[in-house]
Image 1 (cartoon, rainbow, N blue to C red):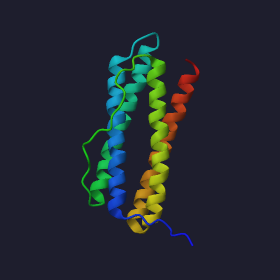
Image 2 (cartoon, helix red, strand yellow):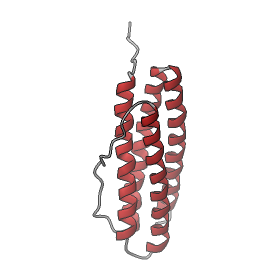
Image 3 (spheres, one colour):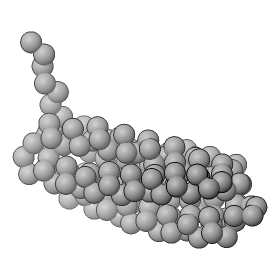
Image 4 (cartoon, rainbow, N blue to C red):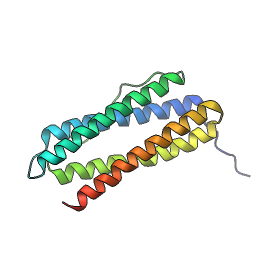
Length: 149
């Protein structure tokens, strides 16, 4: 008989902080890429990157508030990112990798929230549902942009 995984609040908080580090990574990447981008599609992609950075700043605030609300301490660490990309295509390809990665992470986080149960689990699950939709929307938008390059 298999034992069902039961997440602890401490474990979920650690994983939410890992997600927050990824949100910082995305913010830094989008800002850096908007500054460094070169080439024919510089202006429209730069504008897109600036908009994405603003969205990531919002996600950082939301993750931080959730973590504090659950009794945790938000991290300030930033996961590493590529800062050597300068073409629209290479920047968008890396952005797509980042967005696809977090969607996968959030699906795992949703399962952890379900396992946690109770009010905290329900709040985390609802929050993560919104993050899945937002990141998947971004990934789909980037895929469409890449199809024209």
